[in-house]
Amino acid sequence: MADRPRGFRRLAFAAVALTVAVLALAAYVWRDDILRTSLDPREPFQTYDPPPPPDYSQRASWALMPQAPATPTAGEPPADVFFVSPTTYDGGRHWNAPIDDPESDRIFREVMAPNYAGPFVRAGRIFAPRHRQASLYTLMTLREDAREARRFAYGDVAAAFRHYMANYNHGRPIIIIGVEQGGTLATRLLAEEVAPNPAIRSKIVAAYLIQTIVPSDNPPLPPCLAPKQPGCLAAWMAVYEGDVEKAQSVLDRSLVWGHGGQLVNLEGRTPICFNPLFGGVVDGEAPARLNRGATNATGLEWGARPAFLTRQVGARCERGLLRVTRPQSTSLRASGSWTDRRKAPGYNLFYADLEADALARSAALRASRHP
Image (tube, rainbow, N blue to C red; front, side, top):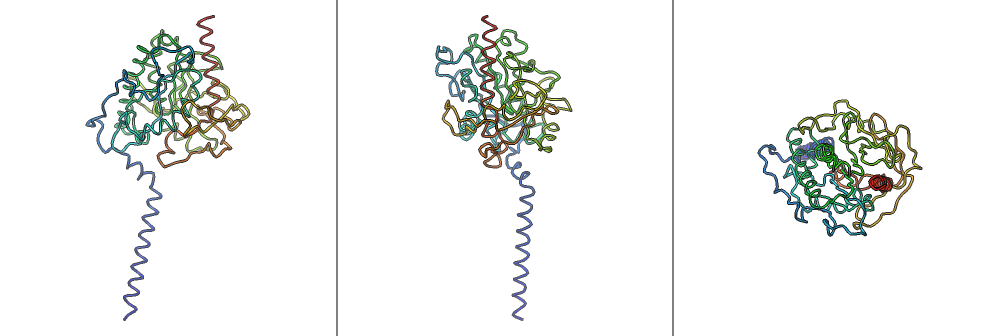
């Protein structure tokens, strides 16, 4: 009789162990869905009370700006850079981030600014507005709430650009940079604030829309076809060679601006594919020997010039996507938490290429304005 309780205990222990194992397996299989759900604000955007708007007359509303934005000095670069940051806010409480969220600001300063604004420091004074950015969660769903949050974010970017033009530009050449979601916002900025205004359009050195889908059938500026061509658009979405699933997902799920400021599906249109190694929208394969320098600038002091790793990647355009070979250096691979790996990576495969490209186009624009 004594064996019966012992056998029951063994059976109960086995059942508990099996249950734990099943739950652990389920958590692993559905981990993306579980983590994604944790970022959902769980409130319709229509009833959501967004954070207070930024005041772009105040320095606190700019993540980066010159010491004397209205009075450039002779020692500063000859152009200005208007930089729209990629997403740094995960989500959870808000659809759109407060501009003073400390963790978002840390990621911007340690990761996004040195890797994506850094290549343009030699070309122009950097103006990076803080804006009520749509959360990372809005990039993980096609819900209308998420589209509303992304449309809402554009209002801040447009307001910042108008303030910059009215108070700080004073006729200087302009480079516009947008990365990932920031690139989508910059695309609309080009269409609504730049393209219809000849006075602004004539100042554009180039617009670099990094990791951004822009349909080639109706771009807001002419694509950059060759190096040193000013006033053009360099847009691309890079995927690694052999990553068929990621490439198809990009083509199937990317949202672009449609009529009336609506975000709509790409719907089979071919994106613009600028190849940074060729300096233009050029067919053919650019070998790794053309790669001037990739770098991981994460954590570098702002303005510090990083060390470059040359010949890290080759690249070619196919079906509107930039197919990139995998880099050799382990410093050029995704790392960090689940959410970190879904933001713009903490490295730039084309840092030195973009730096040289921007400097050449800026010189070409200035030469055309003052022959």
